Amino acid sequence: MNLRSFFDKNPKVALAFSGGVDSSFLLYSAKRNKATVKAYFIKTQFQPHFELENAKRIAKHLNADLRIIDADILSYDDVIKNTEDRCYHCKRALFSIFIEEAKKDGFYTFIDGTNFTDVESERPGMRALKEMSIMSPMRECDMTKNQIRELAKAVKLPTWNLPSYSCLATRIPTGTIITSEDLERTERSENILFKMGFNDFRVCCNGNSALIKVKSEQMEKAKECLKDIETALSDDYDSISLDPTPR
Image 1 (cartoon, rainbow, N blue to C red):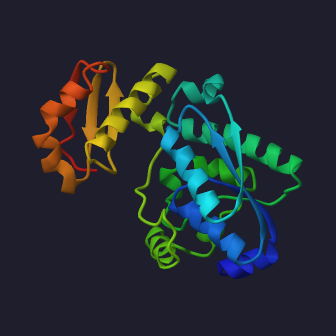
Image 2: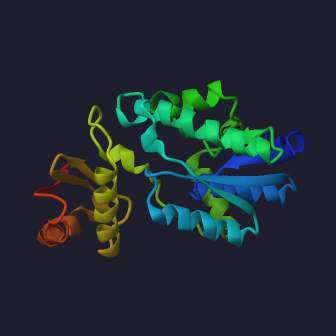
């Protein structure tokens, strides 16, 4: 199967849209293959503001129909407990909203940007997608992350080289209750590091301490800037350390 044949068989689809490279390329492909497609971005406390801006930007770039839905993910007890299967409960909650709202708009085929590189055993949320009959066209077509990036680059999608970005909840240790305060300070801290020139990193919190995880190619820069980072993040954390193992 390829994406053309997928959209020939499924000419009207609702897309769970994040604005990242995978869902952006899938939105592009749906439109290129003349499918009727509507993108749905569900905004929760787990997404930093820049993800919403990216989603708006790429939808405008593709002249695509985008609907933004606000959801209070912190109202779900099974999510904020932050157990090992938090991602499963989160996906169940958000995709239930997605399906409900898409049906109101007249859509009954639901897709997402999961690709062939995504390993099911490492992504508990993929179990929820199966249970809810969410189709993943690029996974069905055996398309890997690298292939998608190359294809997105070839068609000049501005998201082709965006780093993968997991939600803010992943910065909080499993078993620690997720609060809006921790999510907000995580976003503040990561915004500061973005402005300092870092990319593809994580600021993980544990109480009043933060562990910064960066790629190997930015480790030296992080070591050189550590004092500046400590100062910049001092309002939110008592101590800052670098993870010696690169991401």
